[in-house]
Every structure is written in structure tokens, then in C-alpha cells.
Image (cartoon, rainbow, N blue to C red; front, side, top):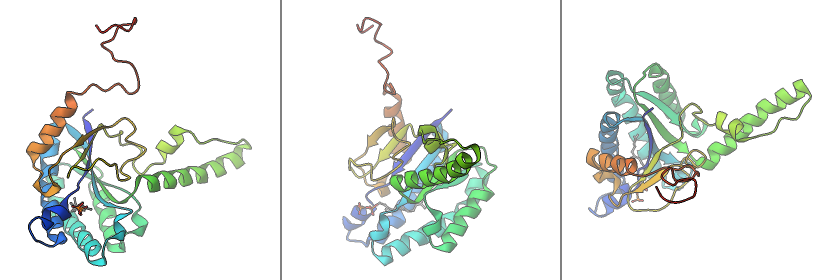
Length: 244
Ligand code: FPP
């Protein structure tokens, strides 16, 4: 199976500030970068690409900035549909749809439905997404199911990792292999908290609007050189513990 790459697209505001422009102009350029990265990703062995578009904390920004980002999302969903159809890209959503502006929630639900049958790369838009929020919602969904099941069987059923995983927003999407963050910050910012347990991180100093397909290729190449152990021992160490 191909890779799952998640991207924390940071630095739009700084990109604009450095040019004496409005922050919104940075988001506009950020959208152009996102389109270019989506177009490049499917040719790089990436099967799943999760983009952190808007977090559950981003509502703290000004009404104007939030409104502008929502407008960009509306435009993106309308303008990119034919590209998705031509390239068999399936669009999905992660996050709480119920708290988004109703028309945006409707547009997202429609694009997800209309691209559901495409078997190419999957682009997951994390929009009104928070890792803690996703876990809380998953636990509540699980509890609702368990309450019914345990009263029917008369036995207590406990929550375990599989139960939580099964109730995440996209339970069939594999955990991310690589998480990229731009603009030089070393934080997870509540992105894919549960799913990123064994993800490799790649931090780029470049601001998101400056990101190109070459940067994505470099990140994937750096990831492919790493050895992932998932908590186990190094495969190049023999049983006595001596390096082979
Ligand atoms: C982070 O930069 C960026 C965001 C919170 C918004 C991301 C939105 C887009 C890239 C446009 C929409 C994209 C799609 C695919 C629909 P920041 O504002 O936090 O930058 P700063 O840290 O420099 O202030």
C-alpha cells in the first residue's frame, strides 16, 4: 500500500506579513500551494493525503479571517471537482461537520459522496478538526454502541484501542506514515493525535505558500531513508544485541 502523508500547512500569515500584505492574501497563496501539492502527491506513491485546513482552535481568529478561509474552501470544493474526477481522487473529511457553516458542510458532504467511488488517491480535508475532539467523539460513539450492546447481552463491554480506532472519523484510512509541518514549528497542534502514534515527522522551515512539489519529493525521500521500528528492536541487530 502507498503512503499516508499528513500536512500541517503553516506560515500563511507570516508569508503575507513579510510582504506587507493582509493575512488573507497568505491564505489565498496557501490554497495555490495546496492545489499544486495535491496534483503532485499522487505521482509520488502517496495513497492518502490529509491536509490540516482548519482546526477546532482556529475559530479564535477574527471573524474576517475565518470567513475568508471558509470562502476559500467553498471555492476549492467547486473548482477542483473536475480535477478530482479526471484523476479519480476521492475527497474525504475529518472533523466535526456539524459545527461548520451549513452550506460548507453540505458542499463537503456532496463532494465526499460524488467522489466516493474513485479508487485513486484519497485527499482528506481536516476541517474543523481537532485530534482531542475526534477522540472524544469516537469514545462517545463507542459508548452509545456499547450501551445498546451491553444491555442486550447483560454483560459489561469495555473500551479498548480497537473500539476507539473503529469510531474515528475515517476508520478505514491507515495511520499516517509521515507528518509534514511547514514554517519551522515543532508542534503537533492537535493534528491526528490518535493516528500519529508511530508517524515520522518532517519539519520544513519554508512557509506553506512557498511549498512546491520539489519540497514534497524531498520530504518523501527523507522519510524513505528512515528506519521505522514501531517500538520493536532494530532488525539489523542480532539476538545477542550486536549490530550485524
Ligand atoms: C496556517 O497558516 C494556515 C491555515 C490555518 C489555513 C490553511 C488554509 C489554506 C491553506 C487554504 C485552504 C486550503 C484548502 C485545501 C481548501 P497561519 O495563518 O497559521 O500562518 P502564521 O502561523 O504564519 O500566522
